[in-house]
Image (tube, rainbow, N blue to C red):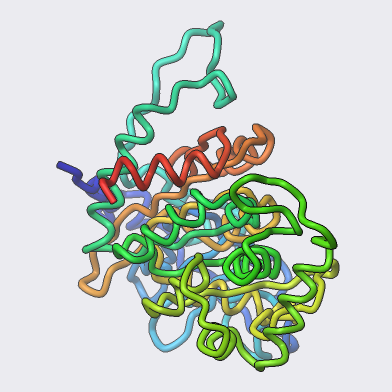
Length: 361
């Protein structure tokens, strides 16, 4: 039976906390500008001593700043600072300036390692059977007690079985939000509309005549209808990832890029609006599974802390999985710390089909 790790808060009766000075607050000099010597946030729980109390930043994000506002710590992007915002300053992390960064609250056991040992990193040769078993239990728990956010590249849309497997996960409540780009939605809808992705049959992988037009025809048709939901209704679409999101009310955020065709109507052309929309979904996330999209994965990783403060005040762990056929992408996310990212090096189409079968869907 899956059980979340307990969180062990710092003992603020210790001398280092009692004798620590107050955190220094300085006003932002201009909109979008932090004061000199600002404190930049990490992925870990961070506490700030203000008014004699150690305050936890409840909704954190790395590479942002801590603002004292309304009696609490608000973590804010530089671009969203307003002149006069009270920003925490200081660059030490062990109470010296009223700032305490706490990476060990979940007391994760460190693996014992020899000075020299083979296969310590995650690679194509790593056996991931145990990871799958843990993930099945985690997802069953999070379905009822958390929020599961999926970050998806277009690779899923190229395979009929992967599209069906992801649709099953959505249908059965294992998907609470999807973060992706124009390509995932375009080729998934192309698969539903024309049974191809980039002009190749999604089952046989054979190219069809003039197939290189298909994704453009799909985008043009959706734009003709004015929205994805109207396109689905008018064209009688009845399958696929985006169709399932629409049918079961699962929100999806499509962040655009400079190379996009079209794009589809809901794609965010403004990168900062896309970032805001993604972060709005990540704010409540307790498990994130990022697959086959390096840039979206790294972006999501940067805005996902290692913990979440629940409405009842409980601090719980956030689980972050990075799944990619590229070892580079997987290990880059794992570098953020074992508490927040676990890598699985595999073909993502196989991964999602294995998940569907392992969950008995």
